[in-house]
Length: 168
Image 1: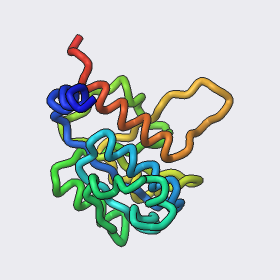
Image 2: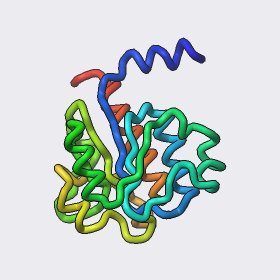
Image 3: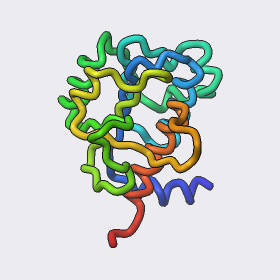
């Protein structure tokens, strides 16, 4: 198992980070942190009213994986996005808007930071205005949205899958 995972790590060069914009439910934060650890996220910013990975509910779901993802608290989403930009990340908001592109149809740069929003309200207007791009996950069922932790997991997987796939 370790050898298998090592071969994938060797094929991975893209830096990936996350900004949580008001993701307030600890269970969602815990699930996001566990997925972030699994996909080698380099940095996590908990902005505004976001719960933190050390909250009791988050720790229960993350099963201690918060130790593998460097994280910090930012008072506002502006502060978190400023730090992400300063660290060289291209900010991609995960939200369905008129300007959104399909996540899997885009070629992304080598340093991508996904910004995900509140469970009910999505990304704030402030966050959306600061994103370099906005992307969405296409859905064909009768449900128009996914749980924030599920959407984040799918988006992180897609960023890695695109990196691992041979060029056409």
